Length: 452
Ligand code: B12
Ligand code: SF4
Image (tube, rainbow, N blue to C red; front, top):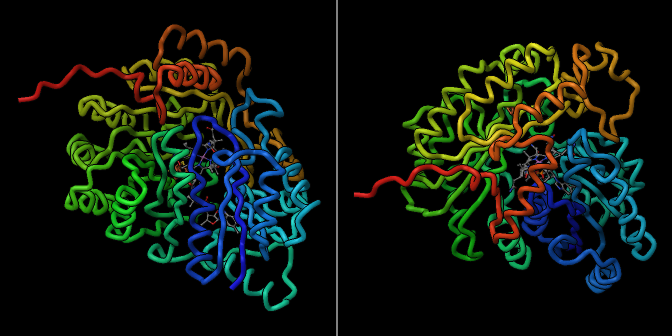
């Protein structure tokens, strides 16, 4: 049995504090493997280094395991303060001075840029991909005195039913319920779509790996019963898989009369009113839609395999069902030009009460096809470091003019958010009125439905 002290390095509250699920999942795997674990989340438990060092020393770990969620905030308007790794580097260096145990890092940020991040943070080990098998293996290897390289390659992808149950910590749950009104859970991993900008398939694989719906609902029941959770966000890359396996989970939630509310990311295609009504009965209260581009030309440029007509149809069904929906849309991507910006803005106007969060430019992630396009378009070379964010802007347009056009088109509409900092400002105001959680769903007011 070894002792592992786990730390979540994520301290951003943009757009709201998010429960450190990756840390909880690997903590669960370590505990199942018979190790003793302690989790620390500076956001919830305090960023004071002396306090954290005291706790680590008291626990006397054999290994420190640090979860890296975000590299940056993927917002092209942000400067250095939207790049999180410098703070994390300082944080790790401070721990290093006082604690002799080896340090391992893992998590989605690490998996996006493993070599560069491991080197930049100067850690002993960095585990690429899923941590459930690799981390207990590392603990065993270190305990056996084996030589382990700095970079540990991906393990075989786990079948859905072998993902670990997260080890939820009540102190953290209380913090996230108070700050964000929810915690999170994953029902599957992977995505078979190949939208050109997206890093999710690289992180989780190109095939869906579903968890058994009964297992997921058991965990939901446990969250409710033992931790007092009534709202969750499903962190799946995309909730509505094309073969509609997700409906099995929805049916399971309904059959157990769960009475919990949930939200998730949806692909805006093939969701009809009947299906939305079913999910609403099962607790769905808001949909975050991966609309991504605003016109057919730019949807094709991102290889979304969607047409704006598909998006409009799903949007209509959400409005008819009185389900708040938010579209996340990036302007300035491949093939964007003045004409597609103006067509896109006309399209956005057709979305009615639904919320639109618009972004300017697209963060280039290595291993996403957009990276090759950016090289071909002369935006970066194959050697350009992507550790600090670089954004794709279509060479066919003038960035400043595009941003002014979007701002002018959205002016005075509370459901149209651009630039992204406007969303944060609006949320701060709403927090002042006691709201928490997604909050954008409160921007939509549906007429009251008559009860019989
Ligand atoms: C769901 C999600 C959201 C939701 C979260 C909702 C909620 N209430 O939880 C929302 C929309 C709010 C969101 C917001 C943001 N997100 Co987000 N999000 C995701 C997503 C899809 C899943 C994350 C997740 O929870 N996965 C489930 C857990 C279990 O998996 P995991 O953390 O990867 O953990 C596994 C492994 O990584 C590993 N592991 C994890 N920790 C550790 C530690 C060790 C030591 C080891 C060995 C292994 C290990 O093992 C785990 C189990 O296998 C990822 C993309 C993806 N598919 O991964 C992006 C992602 C993490 N987000 C990203 C970003 C940038 C953000 C934002 C900054 C964007 C913004 N400006 O709003 C914010 C930050 C939010 C915050 N406060 O931290 C980026 C990070 C990359 C980058 N460039 O920095 C990602 C990768 C998406 C992308 N664009 O590529 N996000
Ligand atoms: S944008 Fe959504 S649908 Fe497209 S590849 Fe990424 S996760 Fe899959």
